[in-house]
Amino acid sequence: MAAAGPECITSGPTWVKRFPGVPATVTLHTVIGGRKSQEDRFVVCPKVAPHLENAAFFGVFDGTVGDFASNNVKDIVVPMLRSTPEYKQLENATDVVNHEEAVDLLKRSMRKMYHRSDEELLRRCGENEKHYAASTSVTLLLWQDHICVGHLGDSRICLIYVTDENLKQIKGVPAVPSSDTDAQSENSNPVQQSGDEKTGVAKTGSKEGVGYVVDARFAASGSIRTDSIPASKVDELVEGNFVTQDHKPDQAEERARIEAAGGSVEYLHNHQNKPFIRGGDFQQRKMLGESPMQLQYSRAFGGKDLKPFGLIGDPTVNCTKRERQFAGFVLASDGLWDVMTADVAARVSMKAWLEGKNPSEALVNAALHGSCDNITAVCVMYDTIAGERPSS
Image (cartoon, rainbow, N blue to C red; front, side, top):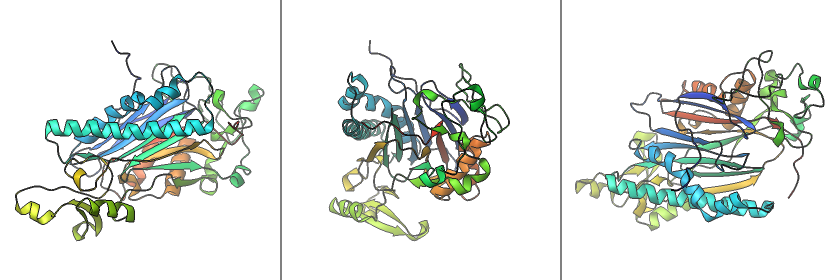
């Protein structure tokens, strides 16, 4: 019998959790918005490598033409990642893998995960006659001190960070206190040694309240607790930056591929003049009784009808070492990003977290004032920031 895979969380609608061996608080909030059905899905796999710590996987998927694609993909991606030779090499490495080797293996494993997941989804679409089901994807793999991001379509990841100059303005509480009295300050929650072991829910509260769990085992030398950042100064100190770029049909590289495959890019006035990929002669296909597909993004899982016309499941993948400025990440479907910039998302989520609230819920609630789409947000808020990590 094959060994069981790692436990993954795919249900909400809202939570704040701590996971053993993950140096971060992870939060979720998902809503249907003004739509008739919820087509967003997510996956959080806090121990993607069962015998390793500080190895976690996160994904958000936004379905089109129902939830068939997103609902399947959420269950496919982690097994496909773990099946790649590159991932197995990383997980089973007995020697220390240097930075260049780690980045290469992470990139190749993430890329193969996308390709294999797309192949499996297309097979299932064919079996179930779901020729129009498609899904965007944004995934984050935290592997020790490395970060690997992959995406298709227009779901995004925002990096939450504090510049070196702004770090100098924070009177930080050391991540590894020299004594019990060093663990508290007027800007910090008191250290908690453990969360709820049964549920993994983080102990959150006001700045004067319960405080946050901090796992100092993974802290860089000289790092400080992220909750040292004063909530009142978040707008001055915290910034956000998108680490993914949407795949849109009218981008030069995307358009060239689509048109070479016999597809077309059309700007639709009834969709605010946004560009769509269409397959073949759209009007002629409709006259012949077909129901041709059109999408606002040019790369996706599924989309069987459009795959012959330039839609591809080839992801953009980027991997890097965790830097001292990194404070966390926001993964979300386009319902959030249609109305919110990276800076705003970073500040809303950080301020909510520092105030003992669910940052994912704060983001979604803020976005609902301007969006009627499904919205799903997963936040990963690092325990520590700054410090110097060893080079390799």
